[in-house]
Length: 463
Image 1 (cartoon, one colour):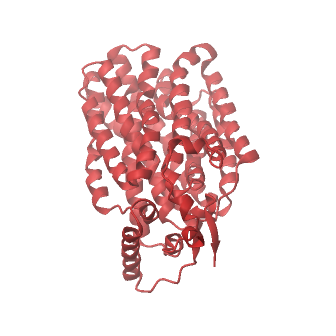
Image 2 (cartoon, rainbow, N blue to C red):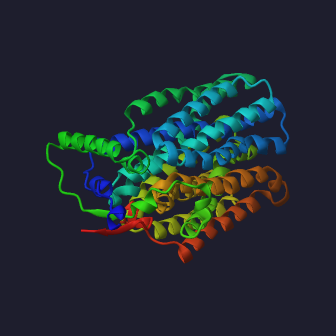
Image 3 (cartoon, rainbow, N blue to C red):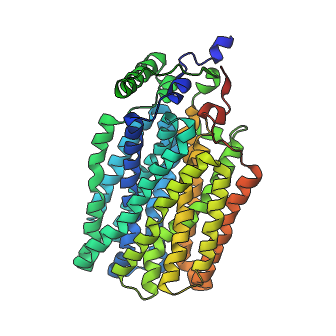
């Protein structure tokens, strides 16, 4: 009976002993590319929002609905996509998600009116929801534990490169076309990375951890041996003997269930991760969606507003690299707490200043630390769910975070700002920004330096 609980293929130990190689960078690069092209698409609405508002003469309520339309689609698509990824594979769902949202983004460029545009942005969000939780689930299952968030910093940095380039591409396109045409051209450009799907289909491998759980020992062993032989050819040396990791396979092979993330043993992970994500995502979405519009209201031209927004969103790139490194060296919990407290200070100050220099300074503080906190945070909750539930659990956390922080909050911003003003909005963001760190401080557990099996509680012993 004891043999049924032992991972005889020892895939965790065999993956952990792999050196950093071209194979590692292939995984990180392909997963990062998925996030890069997705961030171009997500950032698109913030870039074209002011142009569409003027052309279609939208009310504040319509602006809010359009601003959150794709995020609402992400929220709806996340949980079923996570379940599908746990059931049918990370790679398959990733590829089809990219195809869906890229094609619909290009189709949205031909929208005849506001209603059609709103629907197409929502539908494209369904595909984005399929993609969102998968890159860090993939990386977490391939990269050794001591470098997991360092590489996730690089991975998440690709996301911020897309957010950084989105307003720059907009600044290069929008001023050079008529208002009725500029936003359409921009959406067409954002749909071009559809070609990435073919590349990922050919070169991105499936996780051997997932393959053994769902496809069986033979296929998982074949895939694992191919990875090992490829790394040995690259390095010119035999791999060292792996540590033996014993895993509760009876537990691991249970079918995934969306309801299980709310059951005993998983509930605290879901609640803590969701709270932490709401704090970070509210700040991120308000900055990403409304920064160009807020700057225009301060008197800057659309072109200059997009340039300043690019600077603010671009500050997240070094922030994410630092966060990934600190999360491995110092720990997930203290790094998240530090970053969110400093980001909240930036939000508090942002609403009180009007000079361009201070606006950019405090905006960059939010970008560097607020958006920069995601590598460690996303890996933190992803690695706590077992392999059979990893995509489902991560998707659930993302769903709650993006619904409250990316849909409800940003939708209310155009309305609330009329009542409490710009400074009031950012005071509220600052308050919510410290709730997540407080919850993590009091109830979160540290997972730095642990294997996925140890972090998720399925590890039995190792030699």
